[in-house]
Length: 324
Image (tube, rainbow, N blue to C red; front, side, top):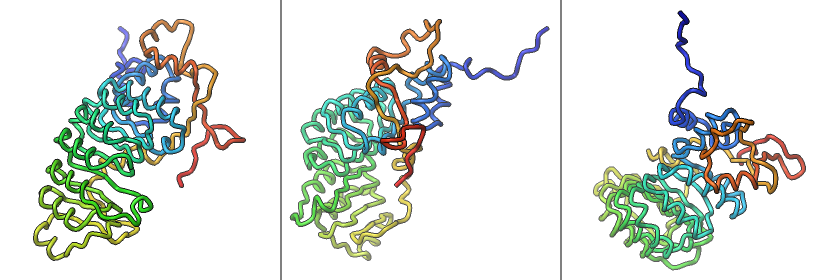
């Protein structure tokens, strides 16, 4: 009688199990390496379990807008509504915000710094972001108090908000508490709030503190219009950690690393889209099992584009740019 093995081949695992395992790999490996190993791995990496967390913040800050839109749309649609965390910078196209919102039924953490998201866009998509618990809309200059108010009214689970500004965008401008008022009136469950270099006054901060009783961390670095008495803060808000307005190089951990430290964030996605060529996904002569693995849009992208790694303009090859 033939003995049964205690071990199973990896390619025999069901796609859902492989997808869960592949989430421990970097985004670069999931997109460029796993699909060319074998058919079962390519099938698994095309499924939603690999795309519940997407972090392309570093790469997105260095690519062209049309490249960013195509990559992000492909990855978000692969999540099939299971996306829980998305981190991307510099979105410019109004349509891509709609794509995110349409796939946000499970989305809990959303980071969209430096994006061209206006109040009108927020008003259109906020109703679909009801599961959001952490939001980063720092340096989004087209958004204002109305957009924050829409977020607060629709995102009832919101506990963390990043609304930092660049000092060059606020220098010399008068103080305004309209955004502070929007936060105070619609976000009572906030525990973590960042408003560095904001045009906020002491009155605005006190209104936030009075209406957000669960607040544990407040970043007000560079908010030069704010003056808070330390003794008053210790007596009235003993659990609150306040950073600023003096700007320091470093500060102690605020306990929200799970929102800000995503596993792939230290790596640059050094792939680029190049016109022409064929997709580099695993294929063979009897590839009938691939039918239905990719949707029409994915296949179109893979037919038109392929990934390459680059060291520089003159010397293309397998290379990861160093962190700055």
